[in-house]
Every structure is written in structure tokens, then in C-alpha cells.
Length: 417
Image (cartoon, rainbow, N blue to C red; front, side, top):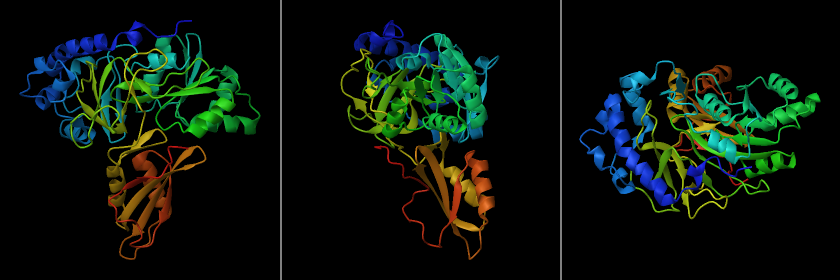
């Protein structure tokens, strides 16, 4: 069995760099003709000169808050998509909200490579528990698995009992979804007397795969690796493993993107090893995004992976450069918390606290009453679900008791456990 998805994974780093920066000026020229918003964003810049990382670093970083503003001013894509690429394709909306068109080619999110690195092979049956509703996650992983030659069950999210019943019947060998939902399924199957022991591998994303949870899966006979993916670019980086299934350090950068690590709040690249914001440039002709700031923190690891893949590695997800936080696989933005406050004049201040209950993400909205009024917990919980599309608890705090530290979202999960 071959150890690599294709020869691109083992090419000399200098050859990869040369190919990327030979292609980039041509891509930028074509993309700015097709996407007027991108042309305005990069107006006045000699794009033919963007032939190196040093030259790329002179371009402005486009952050998601700015992209949302462009989309609101010129819906749906703010001029950053090629209208000719939309026919026969799909359009998605992710929390924020942000609109995203699907890429032009099969496996446009380059997910097949991550499945292969996780030990998944043609003929495997994949239980895909990523959302297929509105957001692109389910489709990105679905297309990658099918491009590899796998059979996919599009399970989507929720309906745990039905998912357990379906898996017990279909007997998939691979789980794909958020890190904690596999445990939910396994525990529910145990309670119901259902056999899910045929799961042998997993590829997860949309949240942190905590070491304790990965260990628990391995004790159950399931080797689980993770990938780092976004709606805009698909799989940006992915884990690989040693021959015995032990995860190797870091995540290998995918072959279809250019990754930079910059000092948060700037566009200045930091030295390898220093933590900064992940900035991505892709080559998706339908949605050409250049130096998009993800808001995620990471760092470049020294050297190449012991698995033999030669692309650079990032340390993995290390938090957020802003307070936009991923919970249960979905981003929640401070603007959404502000929206809840605006809906409810009976509250003066709110703070969303993210934690863990066992291996599951939790969120609790702490609110201070306004002017002696009494907030209704049920109404606030309904607004929380409506705005964030996630369930959570609400706690009424004493006036003046919430910390005055500028935090709207407080992530209290311990990523070392």
C-alpha cells in the first residue's frame, strides 16, 4: 500500500515554493478580472510582481470582519466571487454571516489528502456527521471522501438515536465529524445495546481533539486524526501518523494553499516557531481570496514530518486572535452576543462562557439585568439558539458582577487535557 496520496506530498520544498509563486501572479491576474471586489481590494498593486513570500507580504490582509462588511454592502459575495462560476454549483452561508460559493472542481476543498493521511482508503464506508445544512462542512468532507473512492453516508448533525441505528446497520469503518460527537454516538450505542465496534478510523475537525478524548478513542480501537479546515479554503492542514497509528507532531500544510503566520492585527510575517495569526491564500477561481486572515493562532514547526511529507507543518490550532470562538464545530462571534443584548432591553450586559462537560463543548450566557428588570431565562435561551444556531444555558448574574475585561466570549476550555 502506497504511503502517500500523490507525488506532490514528497516534492522538494524548493520545487513546491517555485511552483506556487509561478502560479500566483497568473492566478491573481485572472481572479481580479473575474471578481471586481478583489480587484478593488488589490487596486494599484503590480500583481505580476507577487513572485515570492516577501512580495506576498506586501499585500493587505483581508480579515473576516472586513469581508462581512463588503458582503453586506454588496450582497451576497461583496464582489469577491466569480459570477460565472456559480451556475450548476452550490452557495453556502456560514455563521457571521458569511456567504461562500462552492469551488469549481471535484474535491474543491482538497479533503481527500487528509482522509488518505488518516489511513482511510478506497472502499471504506464513511459516516459523515458534519452539517449539510446551509454551511459547507459536510460537502467539503463528503467530496473528499468520495474523490478518494469511499462510500459516504451523509448523516449530518443531530438525531443521535437515528444515527446510531443507521451506523449499526451500515457498519461504516470511518467516522467523520466533530471530535466529540463520535463519543456521543458510542455512548448512546452502549446504552441502547447497539454494536458500533466496526468504527476503526476517524477524521475530525470543527473543534479541538483533546488528548484525553483521542486516548479514549484509541482504547476503543479507533485511530482518530484531525484536520484544520475553513469554509473558504477547505482543508488547510492535516495530521499524519506513524506506522502504529500514533499521531505525529503538527499538521502538514495542504498542497493547494499558501500559509503565512503573521503578528495579530498586522500583516507582518513572524519568524518560524513564533505564534501568530494564520493567513491563507488560495487558488479557488470561484472564490479567489488572497491573504485572508482566519483569526486562528498557530506557529510553524521546524523541519519536515517524520512521515515523509515535505510541506511545512503548523503546530495546530492554538486559539483565536480575536474572540470569535468555535463551539460544537460552529463559530460564534461577539457580534452575535451583542445581537442578543439588542433583542432584550431587559439585560444590560452579557458574557458567553465556553467550557467542557466531559468531552462535550458547553456554552453559558451570563447576563446582568438592566435597571432592576427581571430577564426571562427561557426567552434568552431561545434567542441564544436562534442567533448562534447552538443550544446553551443562560445564567442571570448580579448587576455589576461580570468582569470588566473587555471579553464578550470567554473560552475556558483547557486544551492541554
